[in-house]
Amino acid sequence: MDAVQGTLDELGTPLSEVTFVVFDLETTGGSPAEHAITEIGAVKVKAGEVLGEFSTLVDPGGPIPPFISVLTGITDAMVVAAPRIEAVLPSFLEFVSGAVLVAHNAGFDTRFVKAACAALGYPPPVNPVVDTVDLARRVLTRDEVPNAKLGTLARFFRSPTEPCHRALQDARATVDVLHGLIGRAGSFQVHTLEELKSFVRAPTPEQQRKRHLAESVPHAPGVYLFEDERGEILYIGKSTNLRNRVRSYFTASETRPRVREMIGIADRVRHVVCATALEAEVRELRLIGGAKPRYNRRSRFPEKVVWLKLTQEPFPRLSIVREVRDDDAAYLGPFSSARAADDARTALHEAVPLRQCTQRLTASTRVPACALHEMGRCGAPCAGHESPADYALHAEAARRAMQHDADAVYTAVSARMERLSVEQRYEEASVDRDRLATFIRAAARMQRLSALTRIPQMVAASPAFDGGWDIHVIRYGRLAAAGVMPRGTHPVPFVESLVATAESVLPGPGPTHAATAEETECILRWLESPGIRLVEVDGQWSLPAQGAARHKARIDLAYRGLDHKALR
Image 1 (tube, rainbow, N blue to C red):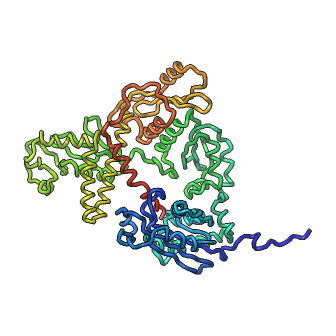
Image 2 (image 1 turned 30 degrees about the vertical axis):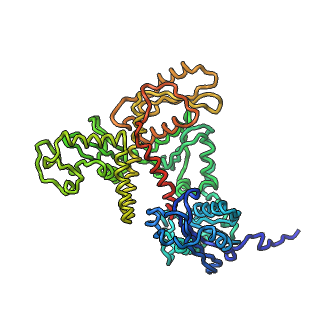
Image 3 (image 1 turned 90 degrees about the vertical axis):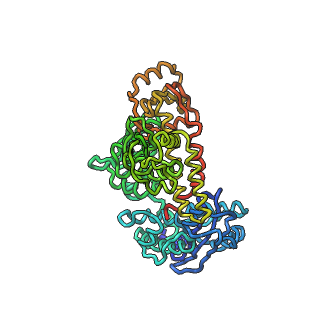
């Protein structure tokens, strides 16, 4: 039988014949359930030619947060006369009808469109979607671009339009990026819409060639280590099923550009089988901290932390230090950087008039007072205006705010933010908001860590899948032993044996003397998960009644969704 040449329909739709609508949204936040659209911009293109544009501001039905106004330049005054989303959505859906939707970080924009459709009774758009972030990660190397942000790609492809967090402007820049990426995809023999969609999802040749590296990995919980031909550890991960997880690195589901790059270098995969999933997670953290693999970003340098210390001297001050000593001083942390510690210190200074000078003072020191005294922000103990006993009240207030009750800091900084907002000094208010958030989160975290790390020994259990129990021994916030008690086993001798063979852990100062904060937080997450049973607790496990956790919930809610355009 003679071969029959396929039709164009069978070969796919050439990209030159595809109508794309490249669109972008600006919103009041990152959650469609809680935030609203403030601007829509879209550009319709085909074969490199612009067929039309769609652009409108949208009244979100409520105030635009000041930090969003700073980011986008869209203010309440600009949208007061704009149409509501119910008037805009039908026109936008008509504009995109029959086209392929394109967006940078498309998941964010499409979620808002679908949420608006659901709220107004419209069927969600079924248009094919192309995400320029995914496409860029597929066709560009890290040697060419350091990241997949819209601004980075626009500069790389020499777009005449600079992204600026305004919808139409960003959509126009994304059009240039799309055309540049399609041109790059052509070198991979991608010429049709169908090829483009499958290309983004397809595993690379390196992934396909190295699938055999997963063959010797068992179906068990544990840690896996990718190594190059010289034995250097490239990447460390953990899983409840090592075999399945390692195999996933060689499939189309693995699209992270750094990981795909790592796979191209990897020569072998080693594994460490663990008794429980918690042990695997803890061992992963310890191995990453020790080996510092170049393709792991999380917790690579757990030792590079700083603390905020209330010094032990006649007139204490807040100092940024790199270690916690056994000196009965008050500490707050750990912080990942000196800048974060300084932000927390500034927030605390807003509530407590501690001195901010760095010189050592004694009860007999007499030097001229600085400008902070004139501003009412320091009692000037240096000039003799405040006795050690009077100043000790400020030091005690600072210690209490750091360790037990953050109300004073939260109230003082919130009041300042309110004053700045009334004066329309939004950028200064946002700086104070960030400082307050840093202090509250650090205090809440330290109080949570300290609650566990002061306990000499805790034994806890969780149900295993086969009817047995995962048993863990925790000493001063460090995982000391892990084991699986089979179904039907008498618990007392099993627990006693596990405790007897557990790692010895000595007490020390601060909440992270025995383990990193990341390890203790990992254990805390497990302890707070459903089904956990406390077998033994040597001491009390409790949080301060007036702790910072109460305010952290408000802070986290206010910040929810602020990083929704991190890829831009």
